[in-house]
Image (cartoon, rainbow, N blue to C red; front, side, top):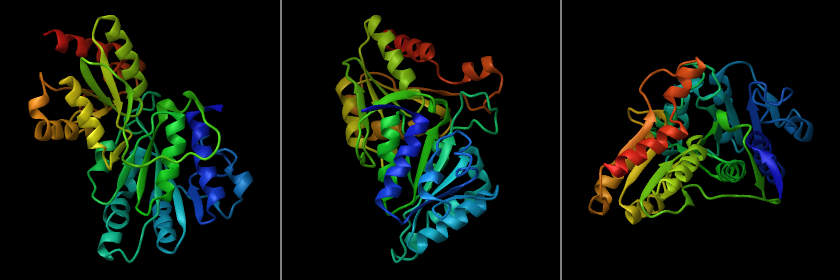
Length: 325
């Protein structure tokens, strides 16, 4: 057992799979000599060399075009897009090529390809470098999407993504890179499509993801002090989605709150709400409430960014008001 930061867990997860399988290669901007702009890939070049860990030009289209070709010809590439905002630059390759080619070749070509990206706000990077894009990616058929919230999940979900035969997008929450956790030694591999129940309570179910997970857990402790006992579910995997766990925990309490960093319009929580309405409507005891970032570009100013993102106090106050009304 060793304490790891979220960023160190990125390097550990990639290294674990590169040691296991020589077909795993890694490419992206400043990922080799510099160890990544967020220092999440430090040490990989020293261990695996420039043949398997490659710096690329500043071109998201080149990175994903090369990774797609590598996956089609037998390698298992990991491609880094530095900021998830920059998916907008290479979205055609992601949506119309990577996500569709296995289907269009009737399975003759597999795509064991992982696309990593720093995602979300909280670091004062402004509207063009702080977007939370889960809703962009999960809307594309053919892509799997995971969002680890802890260092342990970073290692396990990265390993599962790298071993998968389909393209997987791993959205790493930039605000969590310095978060620490004790992580077990040895090989860690999770299963895609598994949510985690982090806290059990009988009054309400809070369903959350990514950087909102620690905030939601803290809010749940505040609510417990006010007499409201909450279950907290970390979705972890958006595609595939663990509907059995998520809906099962909602049914137990009869009250659903989603806590989302992405903008409210078409956020991932809307899909959870839709499923709850279709599948467990008669188990619900009150209105569903979504706690989200407003549908606005995220401000760079400290106070305004803090106001836009769901805070611990806003989560707790929203749940308490709804439960007592």
